Amino acid sequence: MADIVVLKSGLDVTPVLEQLQEYADDWNTGNKMQGAQTLLDDRWGFPAVEAGVLQLIMGVTTSKEQFVGDSQLSKPTNAYFRHNKIREILADNGFPELERCGFLSLPVGGSVGTHIDTGEYYETRDRFHLSIQSSYNYDVGIDGVRIEPGTLFWFDNKQPHGAKNVGNDVRITFVFDVLRNKHDYDLPRK
Image 1 (cartoon, helix red, strand yellow):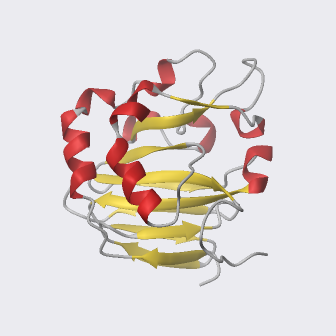
Image 2 (cartoon, rainbow, N blue to C red):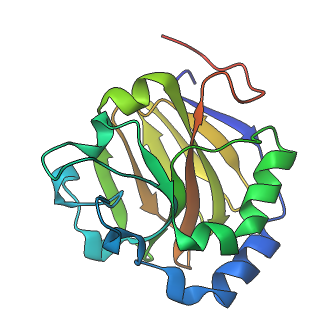
Image 3 (cartoon, rainbow, N blue to C red):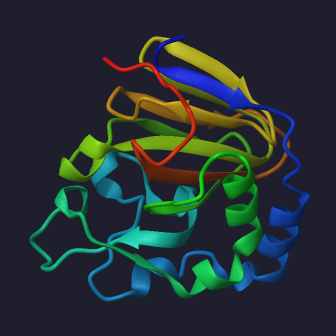
């Protein structure tokens, strides 16, 4: 599979779930910051009400006219400082520095429509997920894989990709970007 690579599986994400429960009020607050654009909006063809967002580092723009995908600017949210367990797990697994990142939730049976991440921001970054809760099918290009909690994977977000929650719980995944030279993994390049 050239468009999706499972890097590790079986990681213990229990501490992350505990923090998500402790700070449950952090969900869906990031898009209230000035200059912020949420990771999910109508532009990508799926309604924001279907998926929840808890952003830790979000993209910001200098004007309302600028597309966040073309901005190199990012800003930590207040939640960033409370949710340290996810950062600890990622640092222990080869990701000491994160760019834009956040948790996404998806209800049972819900799906994220096929889309491509566009903009200058993505030209120098790799996109990863760490699955936190529930099982989901993830399709990238012509590749697809079933993801279980504790799975860390990379995918080519410049290819059409989308997800469907096939588990019995709300799907929670941590989506994060890393500068290409700031992680320990050798990934396929096109």
